Length: 372
Image (cartoon, rainbow, N blue to C red):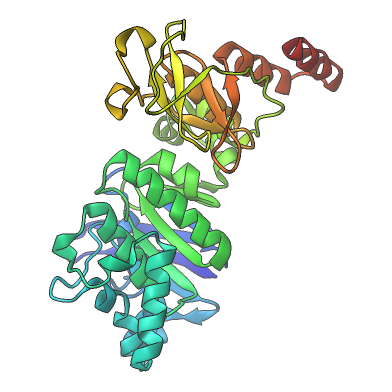
């Protein structure tokens, strides 16, 4: 557990970066610090590992005053991931991951085994181990950064906008990998971001900071969206917070329809309609095509990939977004293995959203109507 008690950081010129901050980051949970530029997010994070010293107040780690701990020992027990990975350019990927274990005196074999294991866990191919950071994409570098932070199995991780320097698709993949790892490892994590969607997706609790480092509100994401404490928080989390809150409502019994499909590499001969869904041999959706625009076999060049894909076990937000973003206006829904189970339309999802606010007897009637 990390606890801030009345922590203030004031610089010699009088600038107050953090002002009387009190909050607790629970053990095994992700606490996200979010807010506009100049609100003290990174300063607060860096005071935990004493890269910045607080002017006043107390920061404790599992009941120990960090101000009285040896700085090097404190930092070696904390994983740290920053925006541009911060990798050593003259060291290979494998050597970068093994940095902290080597500092802690692990033997070479143990360090190599741990480094290779983590590269696999963050989704990097074994052949990348001997490359240098400059030979990797931005997303690959960030994965190496996460692996390095985990190498010595620290109980605490600090993450300063680690995914903000990559494109949206890679960012979403990194977030999912991060959540999968956290579900297995249960680290105590403080995560800084300026993106409210990222904060809501990743955080067990979200702390919204005002400019000047004052805490505006801290709560779980669902409560934050439903009950912003004031106009500042309401504006920051966005006027579409009602839509965002749908991600906390599981999708109940979606009224799925069968969908015509065609295999990639096969012709659309005889297929009618404006849009048809293309799948692979395992029935995993690849994208939509317009049959009238395809002559011969369907190739990847024909695919329209604009629509998102929802999981049947996912949220109402995921189902609604899939329907709204699909060029056919039919949202693609898959099972947990990624195989197609059917499609759903936006008005059907909206009916379920409305039903969620009705008395139980009305919900039963609504579900019966959708299934008819």
